[in-house]
Image 1: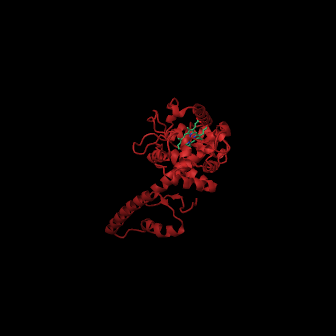
Image 2 (image 1 turned 90 degrees about the horizontal axis):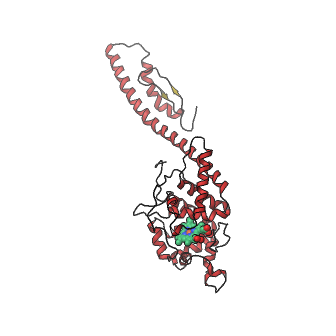
Image 3 (image 1 turned 60 degrees about the vertical axis):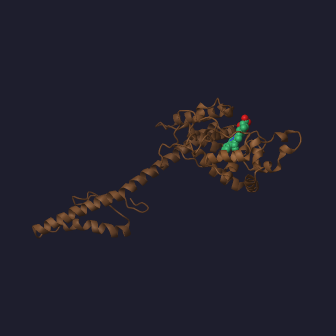
Length: 332
Ligand code: HEM
């Protein structure tokens, strides 16, 4: 059968030293197999002397060895690449199945809580300590004050996980961290945000992460920048990820629509208006961002250009859900 660069048919050769031949497409085959076939063809003609026979055998033997080695050197990467593409196909199927089950239990009203859960699982990551990160440890951290209100979001995650495991005929063991990562991405797209591809294969931690690693809501821009830097994120990524607060009840536009109104509202500083609900808009950390020149530059860009916000949010989200993750197949 012919494939993109190679002919994959194996043939039996007459030479005892080469048990199969790997066929290349015509042009490459001409260069390589001609030399491979020659000793075999010679062996069909009658040997003239014992010396020439033994020379020929020797040539054939060393030739055969060389070919076997070069065949292995050639076939091994091919075999690995075929295994790799089959693993990729399985991962794509697993992702589709997981997305399907998540969509059955996720609603727009629950999207904000699920997206917040992503940050509270992954945001514990500290690069210098190599601790925390996207590892499902939130399961053991629900009693911490910063995680108040996340129980119901985790319930959705566990429901989707159970459904995937029941649906999958050959038990597909999906980690809590994978389900949280995919559910957060689904929450964003369900509410009109960008579609975010999520890699599967995270391993879950069996213990809670160290305490006090999530940024506090009372931090100013300097504190937030420091905190995000320790997690490997730039100021631009801090501003892009904070756009998640467009969902939920903090007053940045429609609570179930993921768009760039977070940045538009920040620029208006409604909390400065006296009285009324506007004074309730945003957390101190949100309000702090706009007082910092570097953050303000990104806030203005994202307020002007929703596509840019979606692109940068997508990339920062992918980085967030891979933060500190330990992988089942590290190099896949
Ligand atoms: C920059 C540092 C951050 C701080 C200090 C912070 C803090 C908070 C706080 C205090 C709330 C209110 C929770 C409540 O209503 O009880 C909240 C809500 C939320 N946070 Fe953050 N957050 C931060 C970054 C993030 C990031 C990076 C994401 C996701 C990528 C995120 C997603 C959310 C969402 C979606 C909500 C709304 C939840 C709801 O209304 O149910 N946050 N955040």
